[in-house]
Length: 327
Image 1 (cartoon, rainbow, N blue to C red):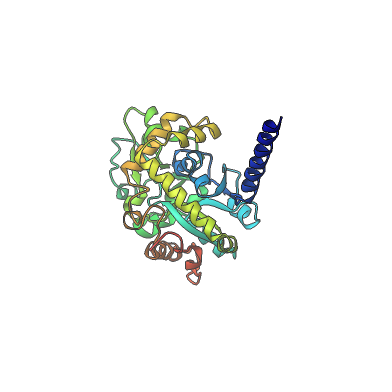
Image 2 (image 1 turned 90 degrees about the vertical axis):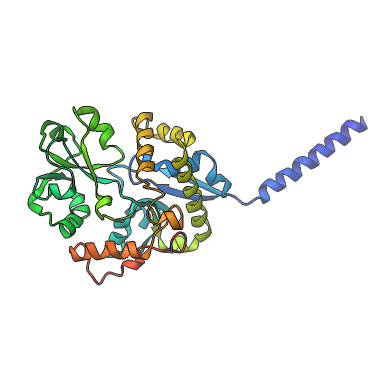
């Protein structure tokens, strides 16, 4: 039957043409991006960008790799096992101080969530009220926010008590003070106390390190500058959607990767992020989500180098670039 053979021939030609088009289309560029901790609400922007197809639209194939207590992302970045990862101002300053050319390219939290938490009705209203009180902090914190407290508020090492990520000692002692996270303190600790805890956000007292940053090795970033720019723009759009709504697509993906987190905590975290303008405040108000400035990096470095955390000769400006987002 000629008509059938003609139709079959046209179908074959169309199929071959479509196959040729598909093979000619550029493949999505793969990026392995690691979180600094287990998937949680603070990571909403990355999960929203992934789940809502924002990375796909940018021509990227992004794999989100969970972090955790055993993960050493700077080492994996240096070894080429990861392309980009999430960190803080400290991350690439530490890398530069160790001779590894790590560079931060964006900061999605203008305010670090780090807090000190006290019980209600204990005479604690401001940071100054904690100057001479024992405070439970983790070992890594001694070289980070504790140095800021010593430099700016004259706290002393005699105040330090061990913090083991177990809330029991804090809950059992009304006079106890411990480190915390503003996006979960009132939700997790508050549920177990007769009154809401006093939560002091260090960023409100001048602790100006960037958090939820994106960093990588300079050679990789320079070789993949276009992909990095697209990744950062899509991630910023993801955080914008988290700030303006509940980003249900991102929440679903995040909870699939970490079911223990829970939906109520997710909503609480996004509420705190909005209320405190953690994503949209600071430099982001004028320069856009993810922005950084030379002034903020300079102030952070001077505080930490004056405390002896880094040598004053360290070229701290190598730890970041404003090429992608900044001013």
